[in-house]
Amino acid sequence: MENLILEFYRRERDQAAIRAMLRGNEQFDEMFQNNEKIFSDGIIVARYSGVTAGFLSFGAFKRATMTTIFVHEEYRRRGIGTALIAKAGQLLSQNEAVERSMGTCMEGDRSSLQFLYKNGYYISYSSYMMERKDEPLPESKISVRPYEDDDYVPCHQIWELAFYHMHEKAGILPSYYYPPNDRERKRFIDDRNNRFVMQIDGDIVAVGVINGNELSHVSVRPDLQSRGYGRAFVSFLVNEMMRRGEENVKLWVVEGNSAKKLYESLGFKEKSLYHWLTKYYKPDTRLSRPPSMDIC
Image 1: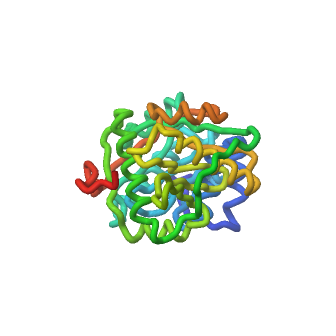
Image 2 (image 1 turned 30 degrees about the vertical axis):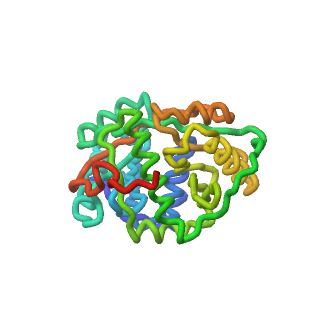
Image 3 (image 1 turned 90 degrees about the vertical axis):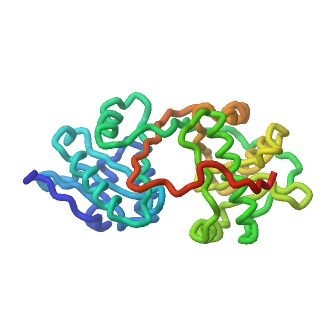
């Protein structure tokens, strides 16, 4: 396509044009800003007849690489999206670290879903984006502290087991367990100021992560669920985010996850439903089920 040029991102040249193109599209704007902050080398800009018409970005090149493609409405159906997804496939298939690409698509966006299906993606699961704007929540007398490096193994196990069992109950396939690894451990300690653990009698029973105004990876040890620990821990984390100056708190909850009722009871409301899509480039190296040794 003679009118189309794909170039690697340069902030001084491209940032203002992309932010203007994304005006009114909050979800993509947040994705772009986050990817620019953590991996600006993974952004490719599409210029059509000299105009910034779209972009491709990656969260990072790792086993599960978050991939974002956006084309301005005015320039769709001109082959720009096809060129960008082909570029993504080229880069991801050649990268030794990448096993799969993941992306999101809003419920009801049939044209984007058909485009992704055509290019080898399929829906893994769907998640609600929920939001809370109310006053701080009542807090219980619980023991919560920031994450430390020695917490890695129990935190990893709680997180992986909780999400594995949740996927099983929600009927999500394939369901996997990801073993501990040094790369993840380093990432956890680098982000320790945003990670929290809840303890009972000195044992870690729940873990959670704060990322700006988004609450994520809240997990209660499977054998201690449905005892009120999740409500107490989420209340603490929401209030911690508000203490940090956030007015609106967001979180994702998988469709079919019983925790959605808990979040609704704490004032969270559905904002939108997104589908999470996956395309594999290499066989998945995660375990198909947890190892026989179980903290529970």
